[in-house]
Image (cartoon, rainbow, N blue to C red; front, side, top):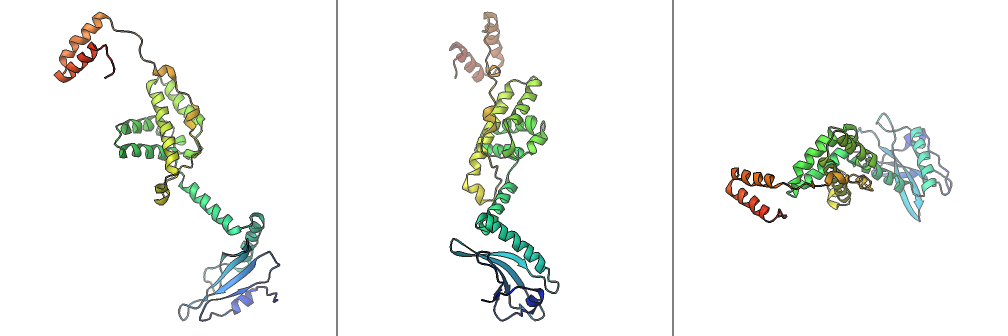
Amino acid sequence: MSQRIFTDPYIRSLKPKAKPYKQSEYAPKGDGRLIIRVLPRTSRGTKPVKEFFYRYRHNGEDKTLSLGRYDQDGNGGQTLAQIRATLRDRRDVQRATGDVKEHLQAQARSREMERRKGSLAQLCDAYVESLRAAGKHSADEAAGIFRRHVIEAFPAIADEKASQIEPGHIQRILARMVKAGITRQVNATRAYLSAAFAFGGKADHDPRTVARDGVLFGLKSNPVALVPVIREYERTGERTLTEDELREFWKGLDRLPIVQRATLRFNLALACQRP
């Protein structure tokens, strides 16, 4: 078997032919081969194109991995030394993983997923848009709460990847509201954030999101779940109206249009049962 070793003079001596052809370099068994492919000239006067590949076997199957184009006469490719450096790296990965091509493809998929991961602000926006698309009246309330208490109050947290948000971040958002004396909207903010994370988790697994290259959030859990509801902020008043207050309320209804006036008086007559 020929033990050909590529050199610059040898590579430069390879002339284009009518059809593409390949030459391989000697390598010990199991290392895979360095392959060069010489392409035909596309037109008279064009520079020859020579491409390098790494060919190896995995599970009895031949696989080929591109290493780059050879730089001949300044055609913008790589030197032989650069090609060999890439080849050494690919062989090392091949020995470590068993299939360098699949490993590199998995890395590329991971990078793409990371690139597409959305921030907390994007998650909030996407959730609000889903409410609007469903015709929910709560969309404007959710948008206002997110804007005031999350995006404007904590811009750094809002810019974090949604997948990096932890219960501590949620605690900081709600604690600021508590310190400011806000009560009712604390639990509302918690509820909307929890719903947004639940929405993001489902959207990640929706085939339509992947098909349109939409934002992915990479959520593995809902960080709001570990932050408790503040029950005392949900308590209703325990004091009942006095007879004088009831009388004042009844008379005050005279200022309302007839439909509202009749409805509220009817409700009062039923001991204020839920409509």
